[in-house]
Length: 390
Ligand SMILES: Cc1ncc(COP(=O)(O)O)c(C=O)c1O
Image 1 (cartoon, rainbow, N blue to C red):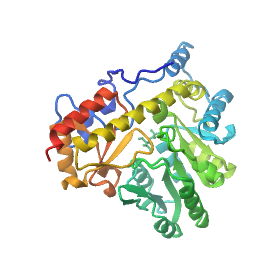
Image 2: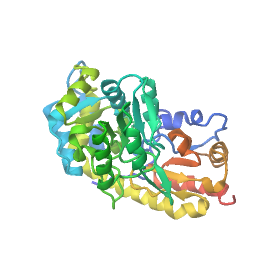
Image 3: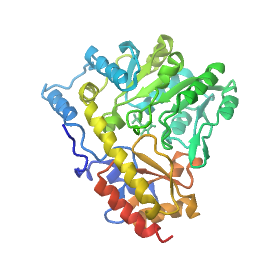
């Protein structure tokens, strides 16, 4: 079956992306018809198979306490990991919770003490640092290095900071949001070795792992060091199911799993509708994901082709993964506020400001391009009108 990602789905009255873009840029006046290109969900309709499974579950007429984490559910999750990533996950290694950030919070609570240090690698998804701080721990930055338009890890700095006896956990992101890197085997091996040398546990956020450019291969951190990794996977980004709030956390080591479960609590069962959708997704929606990846490859091709004319001084960071473009606007020599004001007020396009990902994000924007190509082209037309002359 062919899916139609060109279809415009009107979700202006139900989506955070459409409902509250003003909150993102305080002080900016929104035009009447802004094109929101920020928070990371897709404008595409979910796969019919998933929606039908949820309908079918509703038709059972009750939604009481139940445990939808059945053997079939676990088998579907494990089947996906094996088929798509060559990752052998045993059903008993999976612990569900309500999201990747919930998992980070649980891991920080389970494996660190108040005041201890958790490494993050900025620019990175803002809630990493916020979660660590909200738990009363210290977020310590091991900043990524931006050189010649691309990002790498600073492994020497990582080693130095991991060696601090107060550092007990690394909140890792693979693929990395927002810079889009899909870390290579060599890079993952280096992180594994450093963390092992210094007794640092890795919480690997892999929520973007299924949306990958064709020439790239995602390697799960859980395959590199099963005994020292808490790996967060969710169907949210892959199938546009983020509102379902269901994550499958893979913890191969039984001791680590027990400690994580002790904090999560035993009878913490997922929402049955979310589980029904997730089961269907992992069981039989491979083709939807293949097609959405093809569509997004084309979206990035449009962006790369048009950006030099629309925003001549912009530089697109090589998009190895995700549906999020990380764009370097230092060439415009403007403040973040001024850049966003031009984009929001004059162009009518609402990006995520780069500073949401830490100070290292200053001078960048993140654009969510998981929208029909017609919308992407309209956004680029609008940007061109304002930025081509600057
Ligand atoms: C890297 C990363 N982790 C976690 C999340 C949020 O995931 P969840 O809703 O499962 O907490 C996002 C959402 O954009 C993300 O980009």
